[in-house]
Amino acid sequence: MTEFERALVQSFNQFFEKTNIRAIAHRIKQHRFTPQFLDILVDSLNPDYYLGIECKSISVDKGANALYFSQHFTVDKNGVHQVERIGDYIKKSGRNGFLAVELRYGMGKARAAYAIPWKDIAKKYASGELKYTISEIQEYPEIRRNGNLYLIEPECWR
Image (cartoon, rainbow, N blue to C red; front, side, top):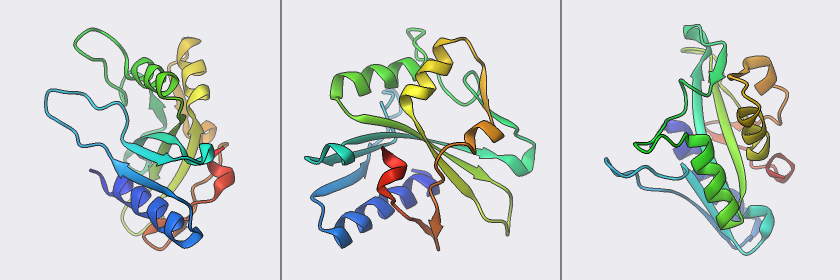
């Protein structure tokens, strides 16, 4: 589990505890030969918090200028792209899907994260576009930080 995923899971669970919302966020255990569907699942009877979240990090400080469908996502042994696999899982499970993208700017500089609805990811991928530029990512709601954790603001996840 990456630091970003761990912080996001902890942030959701703290938010649920503080607001008395019956929900839980958890990381799917990854097995060596079995691909996971998503990085984080949030389970709740409240449909606003029935989520599936895939997490990606981009090192902007090392020259990354975009999130590429070919570089940052996988293709399984059957040739099915990760965007398609996740889209299928979200559709079958009824979850609200998101891609949480963390932009890393290097040591000593604050990171930034953004929540992109999965429907936007699927649409862009299906159109044949190759990437999301940093500026396109920054057009989506920011998942603001509070120390080492993130502020879970409901409007970000709708």
